[in-house]
Image (cartoon, rainbow, N blue to C red):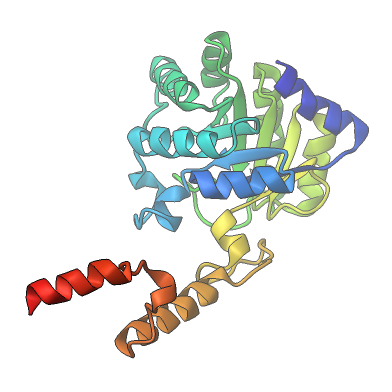
Length: 269
């Protein structure tokens, strides 16, 4: 509970919460060293790391594996992990899935949609919950959600229902900035925006998007590096060096003692 209280305190004090996805130990280690407030082991691992066509292909075993890896890289950082598609269809299934991720190292879990009954079941089992509304990648349409009055009111009602059920945090994805700001003021839980403006209590981005792994970029993202281009350039240089006989040199390997070499040469001769 001490870890959860941190986010409530940050919201109360107006201190922004910085969170980002990480899928393995090196990524988590780098983020922890940089002072990230929380690491999300997202089901976006499927598309960004595992080569799946969508988040719907991600399994609970995948999430357990990557959650454990992130925990090893960031042993003292708050980690929350996604419940993957079709692993929280009932309260009982959600609890079993949540406990499995908790055992793997997650401090909390996140799931998509307004399901207060699932929240109550998980929190009653000792698994803290982060909600996720707006664009829901597992099942929803990729667009801005909440632009009409009716849709905006629905999202406000969903946020309040999740808040009352006991979530400690809610991700608002692809929600108009003004609506995200209104919701953030109406609920106790901390709000984390992605493509939802600066009026939320914090922000989350996908690490490969931030690093520029691929050519594709998103409006909600800010690229802080071009790691994809660097990876390609480094690999091209390595291939050229190997094929040109430039690498390795003796500086990259061990040499035999002269006496041993002489003995071998005599033996061979």
